[in-house]
Length: 121
Image (cartoon, rainbow, N blue to C red; front, side, top):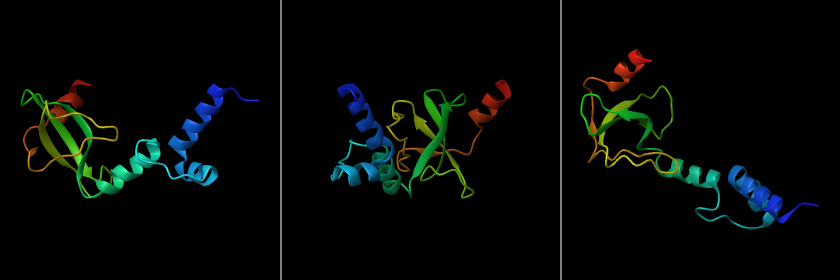
C-alpha cells in the first residue's frame, strides 16, 4: 500500500512527464500549469517562429547587457543562429526559456563575449 505522499509524488511525476497517459488514465484534461511537459509543448508551439535563447552570458563588450545566441523555436539545428544584445534588466528566464523581442532586442554582429569566454576556459 502506498502512502498519501507517495501517491502525490506519483501523480505529479505522471502529469509532468507523460501528460497524455495521465489524461487518458484519469479521464481529465490538464490545464495550463498542471504539467511541466504539457506547458513545454505549448511554449514550443507558441514560439516555433520566434527567436528563443539557447545560450547567454553577460557581455564583456557592452556592460549591463546579456549577449544571447538564439535559434528559431529554440531548436538547435542547421537553420542557423543569431546573436542578440538584451538589457540585463529585460533578461528574465521563463520556465521554458527566454524569447527575443526583435523590436526591443538588437541583433548583434560585433565582437562576441562567447569567444572571450571560450578562450578563458
